[in-house]
Image (cartoon, rainbow, N blue to C red):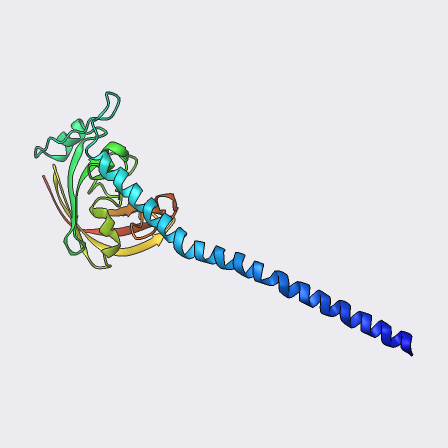
Length: 221
């Protein structure tokens, strides 16, 4: 009987010792977890904010940087002409005209080609897509450090106006999406794209803001 009591006593003491050891170590885990949580709450948002501002600063700095001998020179000359005359002059870096959406506060020069030189001075038109009014989809992209930072303010039904050498074009917005890609319409339309300026690390994110609009009116030379 005594042996059974001693065995139970030893078992109880071991269990108590184990529980005591467990509760002795637990505060250290709590401190570590608390430190990690505080770090995530404080340092991650600050780092994201600094990174976002750094990207914006680089884009703004590019607009005033001295061009190197190997960098593309933009052609900002602007003379009214008909469509066939313009096709003879078109080349990468050529200014096409302006694109605007008054309701969202967007107004940018548009250049032929999507590259750093074109996009740091306005918006770039994908040279593999259609020109305005050619019957297909015109694809345009810009940095969020330009007025395309307001691309997310565009709403379905808004009007987008384009003025070019060879004519004026009016589009009606049919969709605004935040996604990794969009379907390209096969009819006369435009797609405007930019990174989401409201998101940290937007330039590293595959998701972009896409505005799709269909042509509703045009006046060409």
